[in-house]
Length: 165
Ligand SMILES: Cc1cc2nc3c(=O)[nH]c(=O)nc-3n(C[C@H](O)[C@H](O)[C@H](O)COP(=O)(O)O)c2cc1C
Image (cartoon, rainbow, N blue to C red; front, side):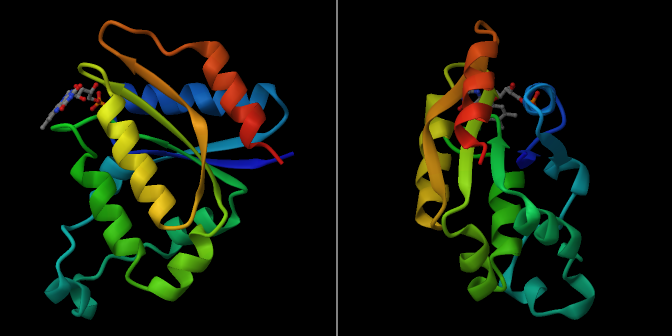
């Protein structure tokens, strides 16, 4: 049994897509927990804020869940041909403790998904570059959906199967 952490960058269609991954994980005998980065409402990362104890958000629970998970699915909408700020911002905060960050990311199996206005291929490329750069093992198959394209349930199931231990 694998423990999936499904990270949704936003609270709308992408969270709904994230929930579909959680259902697929559960149907395949795994556990899948969804977290919503938009709901966390982290302050914008700046170096000045990160040096101020009062202004640094407590993300220890998020980091612990990321460490404990066997695999991550990252679900995010395309914004201007790239990743949305909630995801970028969360990564910046998490990477503050960069040595532990690298340790947590290295070799982590990661799947990517999007529900975007148009194609969504650009955000998949941006996330692939980002998560590969931080040392994760990003699988080739991704789930791309949008206004005119439903998420393919077979792709969701196959990604869960592929990422499971
Ligand atoms: C600031 C902004 C920029 C966007 N840029 C793009 C884009 O470049 N490509 C695209 O396909 N959709 C773009 N969209 C549309 C979102 O990807 C789309 O509405 C998505 O489904 C929103 O996800 P959500 O319902 O989870 O918030 C953009 C939306 C916003 C708010």
